Image (cartoon, rainbow, N blue to C red; front, top):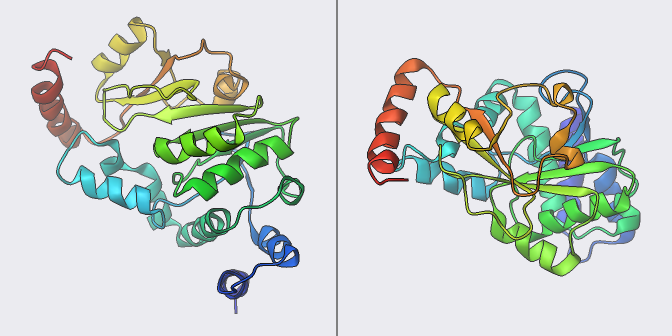
Length: 263
């Protein structure tokens, strides 16, 4: 039996119980895996991740993308990554199950090894309100960390913020659902994050005041999303990375639905 299989059996046994004890909750958190990134896009950060394969919200959005080519979830890089790295998919899925099933206390969540900068959902999204509340409590229980929550599932996040408040050390980045169309910003969102269909639309958004992300490592821009040094309400622009043939089809749909509509 592998470590993952042992962890899975323990999680299944605990979550099947009618009453989960404090000892059970600490056992779950001992299994929860906080990732530290020593390379890649978010080098220097830790992350608490969900999984697009196991998140009902993600699955719903990918299904929606089959009838609307502008839904960004149809081009999910995380989906492809988890398909390549099945062990990562399994561990992310187990993490998501733990944080979305049990409301942990601040004292319990304080035991997680959160570093100075933490991203919620470098993989996946918010599956439900329990998960969102736990993300907020993780930030609250690590007051010296700078944290940032990326999410498209805004209703679940808003309900959690309504209940618990928004920690001063948490930035909420609301991801736009549609390519090239910034979402209407939630009252709790510090920034929006929008993927644009080509170089021209990306640069046009930047010219209008959006800030460039475009695949740069977070440390290269000084972790502005985490420290909140962009102006409040800013849109963060990212260029869609797809093959030329796919981009051409997306641009055709974008021009038909957006440009002709006068957006």
